[in-house]
Length: 307
Image 1 (tube, rainbow, N blue to C red):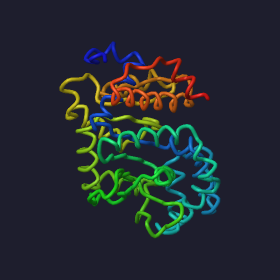
Image 2 (tube, one colour):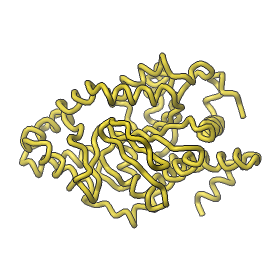
Image 3 (cartoon, one colour):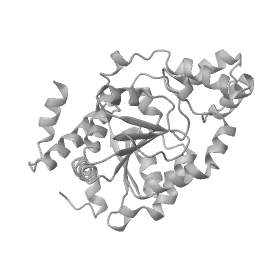
Image 4 (cartoon, rainbow, N blue to C red):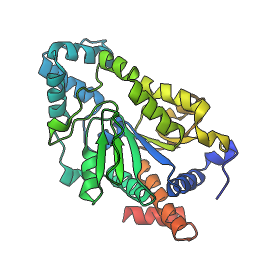
């Protein structure tokens, strides 16, 4: 494997794939997931979710309102955290069918990576989403999954832990939901000031090699932690980057500059549908490393993925 100590080595997707695979085998990989993941597995986009909540709350959408302003108006109209969670839950799972959605390529790829990583030891995944579709998928495939939505750092009893710092709304049992969800400016300010979550997230990110999937790059909460890790992540002692951010080619120039300042490498793809193929390629490389086999060709992987 290329040592990846030079930035020019990071320009090649195969090199990056090999590095992620090696870090996974060593137990160093942490996934950080955003709204793009939920969207790819059948949940509503942010604008669709806000529109549904506005309908329930009886709020007319202002023509030039920002998403934050729309969320604030919804929160004010609904009045309580309980009503906000109930309405969000209803719109979040409105069109979800896990039996049908379990064949979604990104869900398959995430499940494959996490299952592979759990063979080294318990895994920790950070998701900024409310839903539990990934948890359900993992459990269907025999994994024991634990959820932390309140930063209590429970002792893991399973092989996978998923953190939900922005809130948790499971599909079938709202009694297990978080007390609040991060939707409006008030709830966002609370999570920024939540000392336990800040310590927990920084500690995990600082000691991990991270793979970021489905994130826009506009989350101020995550941006704060990226800036901290740009100075403190342990992998920067030997590598020029401490994480990989999957991005669309159209956003690459902006993301390369933004993320590079924080020590994260932006890896561009011509289409979001290419993410699962790349991630499954990581899993294939992991199997080769564990079996002491030479890497298969990219063409071979593509044939396997498409059949």
